[in-house]
Figure 1 (tube, rainbow, N blue to C red):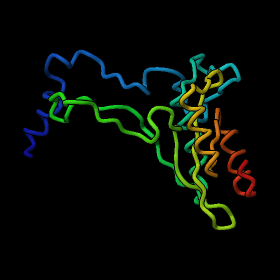
Figure 2: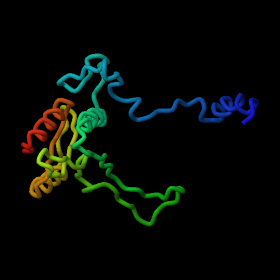
Figure 3: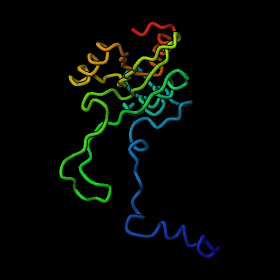
Figure 4: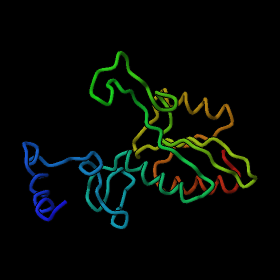
Length: 173
């Protein structure tokens, strides 16, 4: 790219009918936008610093960040949904569903290696302060627990820390 091209690039990226519209991203426009240092989430589900609501995806990020600090914990985000179009934009003949246990699967799924060396299936459902499980989620919880897995509902980083303490002590229930 020549000097002339690199100078023209910023102007070209701002041009066009969409240039005047701001780009909104789900995580950047809703809920508490405070940095972790400024964040002051209260028991009523709002942030004392900014007054905004705390959303489930924000709780999920905090819980996941807490849990993966332990190298014995491997977690994956369980995105659940259906795709009705091909990447080219053409409509499919039928939807393709994705995610583990759709509907009802936990937000985070993975494995935890207990101090004894045994690996156990771990399913973590994140909820806000007022969030409740639906019937499908309760059924998935029952399914996991009946087969020896661990299913936990976490509403905060403190809940995630308590889960890690129980797992490290080999007291999963």
